[in-house]
Length: 242
Length: 242
Image (cartoon, rainbow over all chains, first blue to last red; front, side):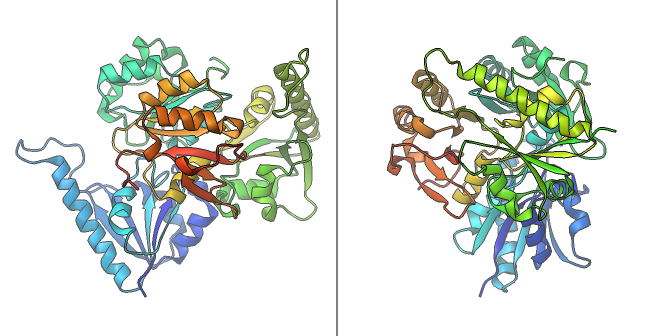
């Protein structure tokens, strides 16, 4: 009997925004796996640290690179493929001993989550289940207290990594918008939102539902690097204007 | 001292996909309010019925109309404005007695949820909090076991009520897509998806995470009316093809 693979969405950061199901499977798992950048605490692990069993086995999966400049001959994509291959092999080796593995995912496992790379490699071979979670964009709307989308509005979820021209084009046709992956793209994103005439409706939300939460108009956000847990939210046109 | 207003996202239907926080506030609430169509069980209430305290006070908010044809001189919009005004007044009257009210919302309160109409009317006057929930579209991706969006893909969330031309146009520019509010629009939606060349990637998901869950290629879905809890999901282009 091989073990079971569980991809657990742990929500946006507040340990109380874990579902009852993710909580139950987290506590039941023989091994808890999570991704983290080198020398950084895992975001997903931090969201559920208070829920772990004392002494529960953990399997850290440490990215070999994040967003740093690489030498010209090194492919970021190739490094990550090798990393996910090895991570899947390590988890597979645990499952082969009959132990159940929970992989923690901030937000939701299949919504821009790294869990999908393990799922694509392992789901064909092991019993598995994905437990959906509360995504950061809905935590952002909740802390804003603003309807994200209503009636027949379209929601566009964009990556801040997209080129300025594409961001601009997508913003022009948008009703409500969420922009993820801000990081070093915040300044570009702000410019695009302004050029599309949406700056008066746009909010910058950092670490929604966490202790260090910050919410401010995008117009007032410092254009230097935004942390990992940050979003731009342009709520429903029906939201009360500020 | 007036009572507190809590908008609780209760998730997609499985009672275990409620967050720890929504569960705690639900159990603590003096009064639990929920929306329902005439002579129908409330979808949100059903998702958490097992969690209610025995004898917990409830406040049903019954829509005066849903999707039926109205006489030409009756405005659907005006009926709903009056309904939300009255619902907010009823909840306000309870809050004025110092009792806390939890309003249940299937999925998330601010993601196409009716709670927003109460929030817009009451949040200026009472202490309030919105608890985000797991939206049905992420439950749909989880039961498909398919990445919804990855890397820098754009997610477009569309309403099936949109005119065919707009649906078609939005589908042409899309990476990953979720289409909500299918109902009597399923046949039109299917045609638009096919015309946009996306039918081979499109899934029809009904009652994700509930007992009566059904998942099938959109190409095989019966084009007659779809139930309330149904979605079309076109996952990430990186998802394994069927």
